[in-house]
Length: 117
Image 1 (cartoon, rainbow, N blue to C red):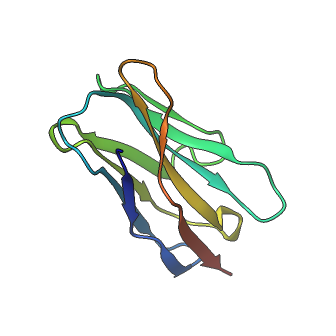
Image 2 (cartoon, rainbow, N blue to C red; image 1 turned 90 degrees about the vertical axis):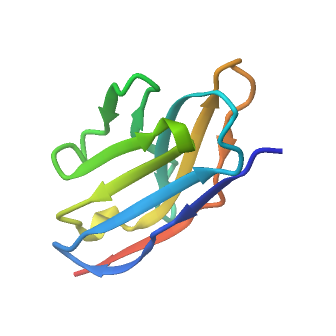
Image 3 (cartoon, rainbow, N blue to C red; image 1 turned 60 degrees about the vertical axis):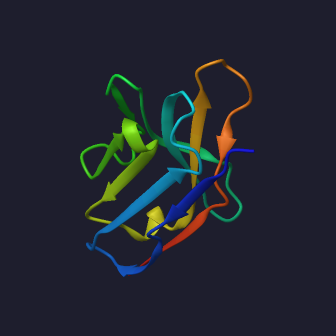
């Protein structure tokens, strides 16, 4: 069973930065897109950003220009650099990875990001 292990969450002041990492427990599996979702209390889970195996990226409107997603295909690892953080970025961030064979996506356990004003 492939697991996604996240790290890098924490508490930061508004305007600060954090970098999230997510690594698959197996670096030999084939993964197409990798991405990040987030869920704030009382809100639905929303897509933050994703990146394809070819390097194409997509960003949610609320984070565009502040967050940068990248990945290391050889290590099946995805990163999310978050700059100019705002209190409204506070949420649990979940890593997501889509297998190349289109079977069920993998999900991380979630990492808390809290931005204080």
